[in-house]
Image (cartoon, rainbow, N blue to C red; front, side, top):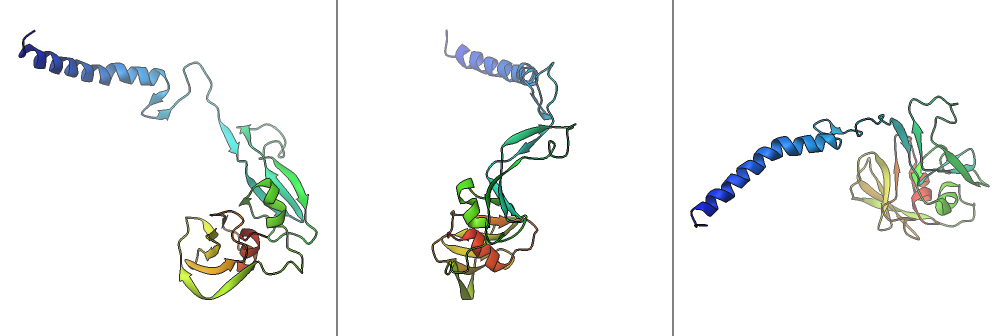
Length: 192
C-alpha cells in the first residue's frame, strides 16, 4: 500500500467511526439506560422510587441515644408511619439528659452516648474558649466544625474554642438549622 493511500484510509476510517459514534454509540447507550435524561432503568423493568435512609447518624431525644440504620423505603409507602420513616435504633440511655434534644450528628455508634449525653458535673473541662477569635471557614449548612482541635462557629467564621483532648473526630460538625449554643457544640464535638 502506498504512503498516499494510508493517510486517506486512516481519515476515512475516522470519519466512519465518528458517524457511527453519533448513531451506533447513541443507540447502544440508550439501550443500556443512559441517555440525555440521565440513567434510566433497563427496558421492561419498573422504575424504583425509594428513599435512601443513611447509616452513621446519631441523635439524642429525651435521654435516649439513637443511631440510624441503613435502609431503603419504597415510595409510595403503604405502611404505618413507623414503617414509612427511616429506622432508628436505641443504643444508650443518658443519666443526665441530652446535650441537645433532636440534633442529628454524624458519629460512630460506639461514641454516640459519650458525645450526645450531657457530661457529669465533675467531668472536667472539655474546651477552652478563646478571648480573641481567629478567622476560619466552614462548609455550607454547618453551624460548628471541629478541626485540629479547634471549634469553629460557622456563622462568625471564627475559631471560638480549643478542645482540651482534641476533636472526637477530625472534621466533625454540627449541621442544620436548629440553634446550638457554643457550650453544647464543645460538648458534642470535643473528645470526652
